[in-house]
Amino acid sequence: MSLRAEGISITYESADGRRKRAVSDVDITIATGEFVSVIGPSGCGKSTLLHCVGGMLAPTAGRVTLDGAEVREPDPARAAFVFQDYSLYPWKSVLDNAAIGLRFAGVDRRTRRERAMRQLELVGLAEVAHSYPSELSGGMQQRVAVARALTMEPDILLMDEPFGALDEQSRRRLGVEMSRILTAAGKTVVMVTHSLDEAVYWADRVLVLSRGPGRVIQDIRVEGPRPRTLDFMTTPAFDAQRVRLFTLLEHEYDEAERTADRPAAEEPPGAGTKLAKDAAASGGPR
Ligand code: ADP
Ligand code: MG
Image (cartoon, rainbow, N blue to C red; front, side, top):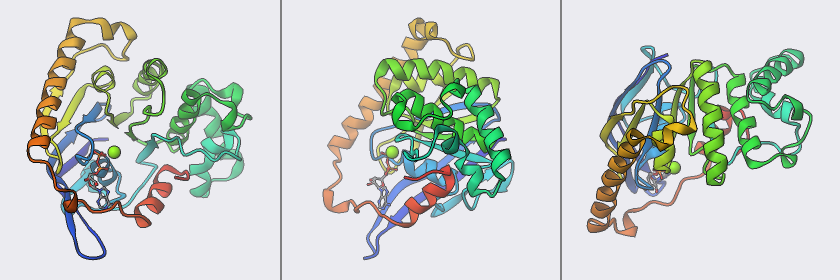
C-alpha cells in the first residue's frame, strides 16, 4: 500500500490560543514494501508527523493518503503503531496482549487467539505465549508489541523509536530479526529513530528532518541487501551513509543553537485527546 503525505504542516494550538508549528510543508511518497526511517533533532516533529500519517492527528494543512484514499482517523488494520514503551498490559498474558487489538475490533475469542498465535510464532515467541510480560526481556516485550501490531494484518507499520528502551546489542539483534520478519511479510515500514546506525541499518530510505518545525531536508537511498544482516553494518557503504547523516544532523544542531528557540515559544505538551487516540491506534494502553 503506497503512502503519500502532501504539503503537511502541523501547528499545535493550546487552550489559551498559543500556537506552535511542529511540522512544516512535508511531502513524502512511500512505496509498498519500502522501509523508511525518519531521523532529525529531538523536538523537530518526528512523532507529530508519524501520528499524522497514522491518522491520530489531523494536519493543519495538506493531506495523507493510502492508495489514494485520504486518512482521517486511525485504522490499525491499515496502519498499525509500535511505540517505544511496548504498551503491554502487565496483567494479561503475552497471547492476550498480542490479541488485544482484535478484541477491540470485536473479533471472537477463538479467532483472535489463533491469529495472535500465528504472529507470535512469526516473531519467535510461541513458547512464551502464556507467560506474562514481566517474565520477558525488553527485547521480547518489544517483539510482543510488534506481534500485536502485525495481528491486525496492517499494510503499514508505523514505529516510533521502537527499540529506544533497549541496549545497543539487543536493538541490533532485534533489528536483524525484524528486518527478516517484515521483509518476508512484505510490510511497508516507517520508523522514527534517533539512532543513526538504526536509521541506516534498517532502511531503504532515510528521511532527514530539519530542526523544528521539521521539513524534509534530505531523502537518502540506502543500498544494501534485504533482509539486512549484521555484516551490512561493517561495509564501507554503511559507514559512508552514517557519516553523511551525522554531518547533516550536526549542521541542524548547530543551526538550532544559533537560532535557539526561546522557551516561552514552547507550549506544554498537550494531554487527553492525543493519548486516547494512541491507545485506539495501537490496540494497547499508553
Ligand atoms: P520529536 O518526536 O521529533 O522529538 P515531537 O513531534 O514530539 O518531536 O514535537 C515537535 C514539537 O511540537 C516540539 O516542540 C514539542 O514540544 C511540540 N509538541 C508536541 N506535542 C505537542 C502538543 N500536544 N501540544 C503542543 N506542542 C506539542
Ligand atoms: Mg518523538
